[in-house]
Amino acid sequence: MFGMVAAKVKMNANGAHTFLEIVQVRFGTGAHLLFMFYGYLCIMVVSGSLLLGGAATVNALTGMPIIAACFLLPVGIAVYVVVGGLRATFICDWAHTIILFVIIYVFAFRTYGTAAEIGSVSRMYDLLVLAAADTPVVGNEAGSYLTMKSNQGMVFGAATILSGFAGVFCDQGTSAIASHPESTTKAYMLGGLSWFAVPWAFASCLGLAARALVSNPNFPTYPNPLSASQTSAGLAAPAAAAALMGKNGAVAILLVVFMAVTSAASAELIGVSSLFSLYRTYFRPRASGEEIVRVSHYFICFWAVWMGCWATILNKASIDLGWLFYFQGVILSPAVIPIALTVSWRKLTRAGVFCGAIIGATLGMLAWMISCWKIYGVINITNLAEPYSAVCSGLTGLLFSGVITVGVSLLNPDDYDFQGTRAITMYEADVIEVDQSRLGDGTTTKAATDIEKGNVDVDGGSDGKHDTTLLEEERRQHQSLKAVFRRALWYSSVLTAIVVVIVPFPMFFSHYVFSRAFYTFWVSCTIIWVLMSGAFCIILPLRESRHEIAIIGKGALSLMWKQNNASQI
Image 1 (cartoon, rainbow, N blue to C red):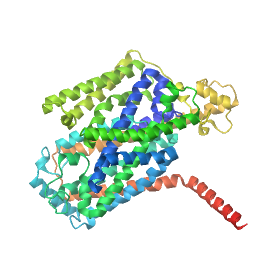
Image 2 (image 1 turned 45 degrees about the horizontal axis):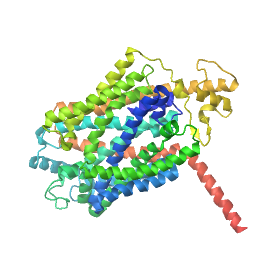
Image 3 (image 1 turned 90 degrees about the horizontal axis):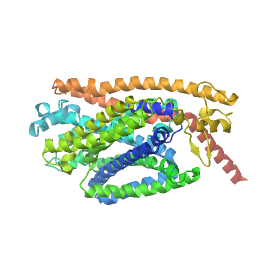
């Protein structure tokens, strides 16, 4: 769904670095500070989740103290983020993705092909039937692990959607802003489809294997299943990997965790490095680009250390990955709709933004406490992260913030033309430059200044030849992005309907338990999807960057040839 918002960002604020800049230009200081709070709160929650999950896995597989892992992971990541910036994170993400998919393929084919413990889809089916007979799942049809009729699963799915919305919309959107306008939505569509294969494949392979192999002597906790706290800490996959592949499986999971944590944490560090939204606005309005970059690097180093401290605090408070997963939807969902409407709805008002976000958050917190008390009997840390109380709170915050934001705005609607947000420009070094892809090679400094100040008349007014060229280019790009948004709306709606409604709901309400044949079909779809996702993520970036790679390769070979000739002389 964020693909639609990403298209609107490129359409209405192509020069922005983060959504905070857009909020500031449109609604001023108060809203800017409010959403800055949500932005940094999101980074803290996500950073805590990454480090707690990663540290718990490293501790379980290697024995490294959790606190040591909490500090070593972010400090190492900060080094290459400071040195390479956003480009380095993109390159590292691609390299890490290759390793991730290779390991997923190994686990998939090992689980369903060569492992003596399982080795086939039919054997996995039999083991899961036996597991349901020994330990039936409360709330599942016939206690089975092979059904979509799962009350807990339905609630968990709702919590996942809420947490996902909150995490995506409240994060700083650096990748959406850094991407080329026409490729933004396509990237999010393919990225979403490819991402979906990763948890699906892990769940179908290692998740089910962790349940099926409990009675196997190779299972780490044999003869007992994993405890609730171990499962919540994300240790099901490491346990299954160790049972299936021994030390090799543990090493593979350790590598996957490292790749995933470094990629995601580097994105969070890039998010906090966009400090000029705070630094340049409130402390040094005339700060040069060089100074902003330097301060951003300082802040990255500080935040890396703070991430370790924050994860340590959470660990000592007995808060784990599962708790933060539910908490993310609770605390951040009230900001989702106001953020989305800020870049997409011209009638949105400052009052609507404030009322929606603040009242929605207040009602969400009340729903969290009341539902926890009414459903579980007592309010404590453990019960607050139970799925029913988390979903009640997240839904309340999301829906009421949306209704209040729209309702208050319609009482006295604005008619914003987005010219102020379109005038936001990228700041490079000591000068303000407008992206040359937008201006064309012949655009003058005056035209750039006019765009920055919002002096260009989009209705057709022109001060000269260059302004006319600029306006024509802006109109062409705007129409192109409108088409991109329409495609994003169509694709997002169809895919969301399929994944969220069409596939799960009929199987849920029919109380269907998978037959052996249907389970085989299900696993086949999983493997095919993850193979296609790997092809998208590994091959497409190379294809789309082939010209740039060729230029870099030719330059490197030319430099090597010149150096070789110079040494011979």
